[in-house]
Length: 180
Image 1 (cartoon, rainbow, N blue to C red):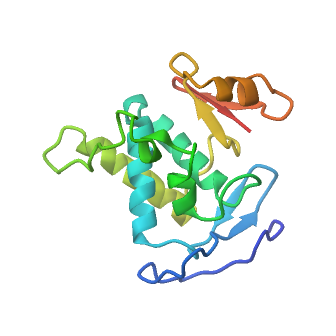
Image 2 (spheres, rainbow, N blue to C red):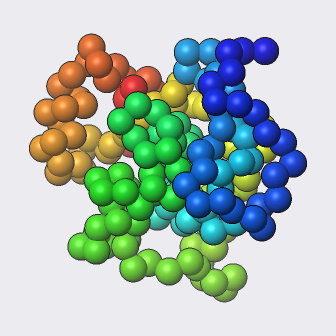
């Protein structure tokens, strides 16, 4: 077993949540961590599913899986919040969840009859697999991603894309490029 990062917990009741708990990771390798159930509840999981769906549904299952891993990779990583909620809703984290001018911001969870519902179910299955520890990280531990053909963030280009020593490319999946 790898180096223990914060501790390990099993059998946590998702119906109970202590505010501001950490998600607990077991370091497996330089780019892989296992996730414990401690530190988030059903609302956090629903928000993660919605975020994955909003951010990457148009790019297919592989892209949604990669974006989901970035969300979980950020929790507790240096420079990022310690809770899943704060990663999802934090300033400059995922625009579809935190910036009211983003076209995806007010997009509701699709209903069963919505043509988008199958991709929402894919997002749910992806998040559940990550939490269950049955999904390997196709991004190799990436903390950032962007579709470089559509991205308009000058900050992202200056601080991530143009800094390959600190932010090397970890993967390219669909239209998205993933960075450390």
